[in-house]
Every structure is written in C-alpha cells, then in structure tokens.
Image (cartoon, rainbow, N blue to C red; front, top):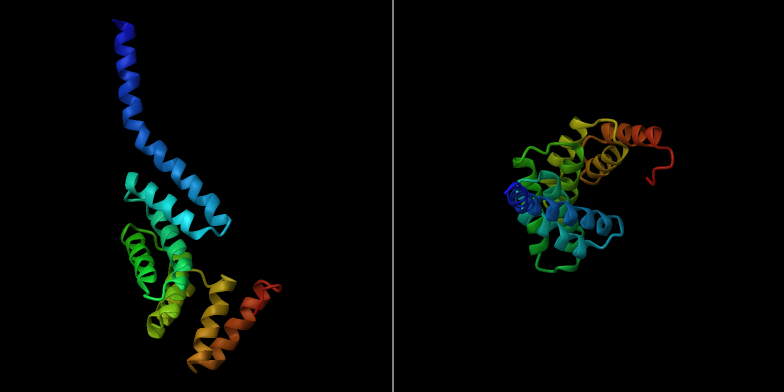
Length: 168
C-alpha cells in the first residue's frame, strides 16, 4: 500500500507540475527564437507559454515585442494592434520598466501615433534617465516634431557620453 500511495502522489504531483514545465519549456524555446530574430516562431512559442501561464507579464512583453517586429510585414496593422494589446496587458500585470515603455513608444511611432510615442518615450526616460537608447530615441522624437530642441541636443549628448559607440 505504501508504494501505491507513493505512486499516486507522484502521478498527482506530475499532473500539477506538467503545465508549469510545459510553459517553462515554451518560454525557453521562445528565448532562443527571440535571440535569433525569428519573430513568428517566438510568437508561437510565447502564445503556447501563455496558454499555461496567462498572468506572466514578461512573456506578454516578449510576445508584444515579437509581434511588433512582425508587424512591418502586415499591411493591415492588425499585428501591431495585437502587439499593443500584449504591451497593455503586461503593464496591467505589473510590468513597469523602461524597456516596456520604450517598446510602446517605438510601436506608437510605427503606427503614426506621434503624441502617444512621445508620452511613452518620456515615461521610459523618467524610469531610466541613463539608458542611452531611450535618450537618443527621445531626442530624435523631439527633434523631428520640432519640440524642445535644446533638451533634445542635451539628450543626444548624454546618450553619446554614456555609450560612445552608440550609432547616433
């Protein structure tokens, strides 16, 4: 009887742990595809992971990032809309860092939502004022909209100082 109880406990434990293991495996697969710039494969793997862990804010962010990259090939704009929904959901789930805000700004720029782009860029800069990518993009967005030229030039100078090899 002790072996039967142990076998039942192991089977029950596996049944409970299996979805988490599947989600972790899918997330690891997605990480590989993201590093290889294989956006569609990454999206598929992340959607699989999110079926098992729907409240994973980082997976939502990564899915949004992969969809945003795919969106350039979708003339309808639906893929970018899906990316925006994933970014919004990641924020609802508590993810609030400069990477998310920066990706939201880049996506808004691609969609032509210039005011939303600036707002998200400002938010990213408030979270991490030392990030050279954020500073250089914010400078670009300010200059192209002919706003606050002295601040844009100061942001550019700060980005170059923080990362001298930065491709400005």
